[in-house]
Image 1 (cartoon, rainbow, N blue to C red):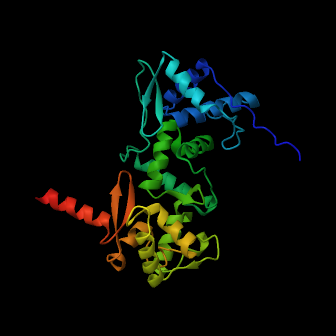
Image 2: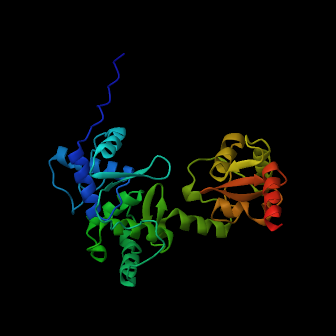
Length: 312
């Protein structure tokens, strides 16, 4: 048997390379979080290895075509922590930001709900992505990667916008403006997105056939109720299941697909709050995610007791 090919050793970067990458993110108005810094270092390393110039002011090759070397992520953080010119700020989980000491910050918050962009920009963006000619557009699914692709496209209505602003525009285009959406892991024109397919399917109360990837049977209302009861009754945490796990458990335990659109809803969260499930479950927010709680179970009783104490 031929020996397995060994992966190339992860590339270790120098403090000067890290500082240069952070400088470019400041110019782009993109907060240099660890995962973004890793992407930028990879883009710059790929550009050097390919001996090609940066594209549109964004380090890298033609967007999506980089052969990015494997980087040593732990080493990058150590370089940041040991450099006197870099201030490392711990963030949620294992994330961090590598800020330049003493440097003013003008980063654009990509998650902000504020929309400071002119209506002309949005109307031109709607016209571009809503046209039949651009119906097949497929952009990278990540917000940062999608913004890079838009920067590379040199669209006139986005001219002069920093990469940070483009990240924010992508977020608003998906979350508020319904200009863009998601399909099979890509960002696509909204009218081609999963959301629209689900809306149409929910109106017809049928599965979203164009999104279905297999021939697994779809649960009817009676089956959905009984399977959900069983899942909640046997959950490791008595009567509680994380919302994202529900559809997976239907498939793995009962070989059934729980289709929210077949039961008249676009989202699984809306389906489980339907009156037809009020006697079985309720949703509760825990931290940043929802769990499904069995009605009459220990978790539901504890929540009811807490509410009573709050009112007392």
